[in-house]
Structures are given as C-alpha cells and as structure tokens.
Length: 106
Image (cartoon, helix red, strand yellow):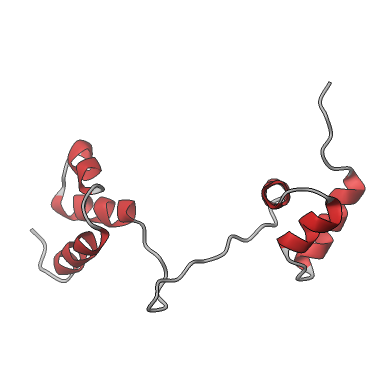
C-alpha cells in the first residue's frame, strides 16, 4: 500500500499558501516537512515557479551546455564534439558563441 505524504486538504493549503506569497520555507515549517518535499509537491501540482537566477551583472544565467549546443549548431559539429565543448571554460564558450553569432554564416 502506498503511503500518502499529503492529504487533499494539506495539498490545497500548500497550493493556496504558495499562491498567496507564503514562502516555501514557512510552508515546510508549518507542516513539519522539508523544503524539498514542499517544492516537489508544488511541482507535481504544476504550481511551483523556480527562482530565476541572475549573474553578478544582473543577466539571466545561461548554462555551459546551452552555449556549447549553440556553437555546435552554428559550426555543424557532431554530438561528441559538442559534448567535449561543455568541458571548456564558461566565459570562453560565451565569447566564442558571441563571436560566431555576430559573424557571417559559414
């Protein structure tokens, strides 16, 4: 038999609290659950909105994989070459991508 972590009432309360601006930390404390458990429940209920992280300069964070994939697409590289690009320095990938993106097509 499956253990029920949240009753329908708890689920409704969690969703209501979250949508009314109560922090995940406070919700977890009130229910005696972990923050990760609350986030997972809100995610399953399709109401959780992940925090958008910013760089020190205020820009949205772009992952190395995204830059490597874009460089690979521009240069028409095979998947294994793109995979090896992800091991490069993030700043270098950003500079290479920007240089390629601003150049004429190959």
